Image (cartoon, rainbow, N blue to C red; front, side, top):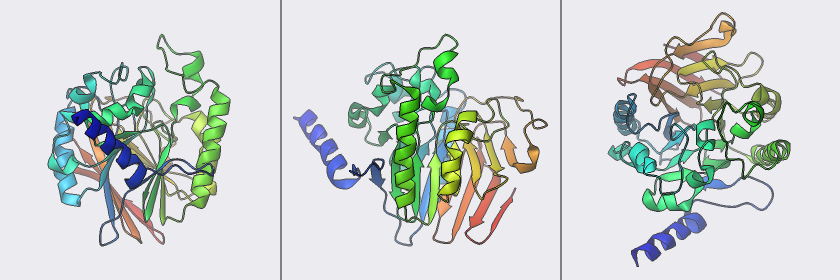
Length: 332
């Protein structure tokens, strides 16, 4: 009986409350109502799922503190949710060991919107998308690509792993779960088409695209060529304000050189690279901030202003990006 009630609740959740499957080619959509004052606040974390090790639990504690302070509405995960090789099934204990048992603060008991990273694709990628995980922990929402509509902010989550050509040809001994990607080119083309429809129909004041891989980065992995060639032009054409990603295990803020887009990396949820940076050959002119250690990001949006804050593992503020539609500046 409890199982039936859980399944019924899950069905109602998808049909009545949040998920809308659009018939005109747009991405699936989740609704997150803004606060009574019209503002929206969320946290961004990436590259985290290590059963609490590599300071994951410490970062989670600080996220709880900041989440309470900002009146958290939801959490965004930029992928690589479970290490080292994703989940092996819907019943993998790593889901609870790395998620449910770690992010226990009262303020973090909100929806978590997650994309898949390359490490997630090395396991059973379908498992993370399964409704079974929502029956285990109702906070968990993970799709390949989708939209979160928070009224004045719309967030477009993009499945970036299939873009990266080396995963098909130079897997370095890893096996990727390509069951939903029978053809790289056709998958990417269809995704870009759906994203374009969703972006063009958006009336949101702020547009944010979320993916796992970086477009601009001076960290270990650097820029992702395929995203700059295939995805970035679409963002520029449709007035996207921010691109948020993980993949590089650091925190960073880089400005685009020929558009207002700001590139924000939050991939420091647990294990971080140490000293793996080459600012000389990676155009430091556009680099506003880089931190090679654990941490996370918060974001707060109003109709006219946005504030992005980067925190370290101790909850200390490292950098702020304050932006409006009329003014853009950043400060440490």
